[in-house]
Length: 263
Image 1 (cartoon, helix red, strand yellow):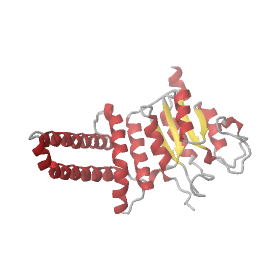
Image 2 (cartoon, one colour; image 1 turned 135 degrees about the vertical axis):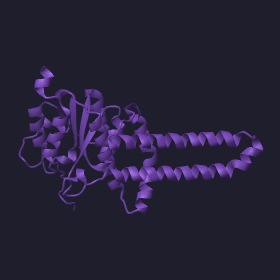
Image 3 (cartoon, rainbow, N blue to C red; image 1 turned 30 degrees about the horizontal axis):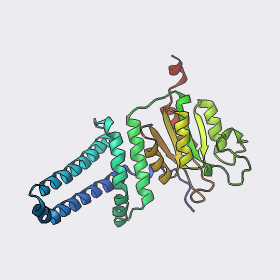
Image 4 (tube, rainbow, N blue to C red; image 1 turned 180 degrees about the vertical axis):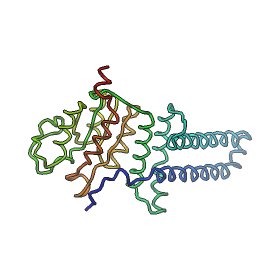
């Protein structure tokens, strides 16, 4: 059983960035070894082949470190190339499996790395100072947030919730009515992505576990998304909860106040 804690502050950003950097260094060494091993054989075929391979591998390494450098600039709060954020996510997809394996050597789990990624991604989101009208913000939650014994079907239509107080679904419905954002309960990542495409929001706030948040944030890009980790007192995917104070604070930091929106 997991502790009932607000996990969003427990994943330092340096963990994820450090593992990405180690992965990039490891790949550089692999590329160099590949070039050295193939050098003589390629030279026998054509004297320019080793040079061409070396240029290709060096270019790949340079682009990798440029991407990591851009990510580090953004995390540090320094000027960075925001247009390169899509490339950052592609780089993360490429290096993350290797980062998980390297992380295990240092005693870090995949979940810890995913949580650290969410911290970094949320920081990038906030650096962009994204503000949208309340009705253009979509809040997505997993169905495991609903009490398992509840007989009411709230996926696709959370307004079916009777607000008994047994879970956080009623709290989120009430908050959506108060602040005006769109709220949807999804049965899985595929449905969540489908809803994001159909409703065409300007920003997404997703509530989920580390794994689903990491994949979801990258899947909806370039749509800006911020994540709030759920709380799992009964283990994963069963009667989960969420810190409503954190959700409210995050929503209020994203939506344009009504008086400004009307003005």
